[in-house]
Length: 161
Image (tube, rainbow, N blue to C red; front, side):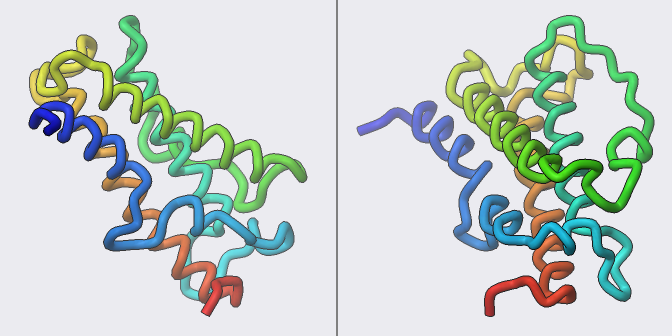
């Protein structure tokens, strides 16, 4: 029988990509036609590209915060956490962003599995900024924006029924 610690670590790694209560990131970003990646549906403030890049940029910052002993928070909210344009700047930008997001997710899963004490503060953070909090923050943030992405896709007519 696994220990509580190993079970918790496995659960934290799983929460970063599970679909028990919602659509996964992987499903939400799959199959959006190139022409719609930068489209803003009526009544929605963000395009699929903006949501994808925002999720990637935020997650990259969390990973950097956890893994870089010399991390300094230099990004300005909200501008540095959103892309500058509503559409991908190149034909490969969407796939590149998805790949980078997945790489970051794997890095967070590795943190969940390997950091000795997840309740300890990240060295460059405040006392409440623990590794556990960072992982849960990333999972919660992604879940929120995946929901937005699904709604935008439905409004654009690109969501499986």
